[in-house]
Length: 119
Image (tube, rainbow, N blue to C red; front, side):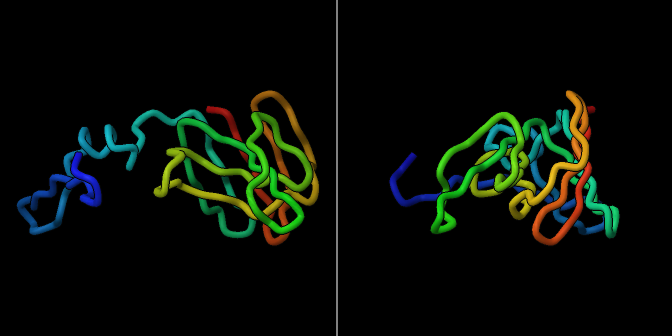
């Protein structure tokens, strides 16, 4: 790839004039995921996001990234894959873990309550 040049995404138009993308290319570029293993539901409005992987981010005192973790804890944020500039969702920091099992966690953040399910 030439430095400073962004990769191009192949787009097309369907019979109704809607723009479509080449999903195989978009998946290879990390823009979309076809396989999902996790489902996150926000309690207040039922907003749902799915991803292949999840990661828990720890922040330092200045609010900058400190470390990534496989398990949740108070003060961490959840981020859903793909893990690039096009990530699916990131929560604010966890203030309370209400319930936690191997395949499920319910937690409060600074502004929402979420349920995360392994599917």
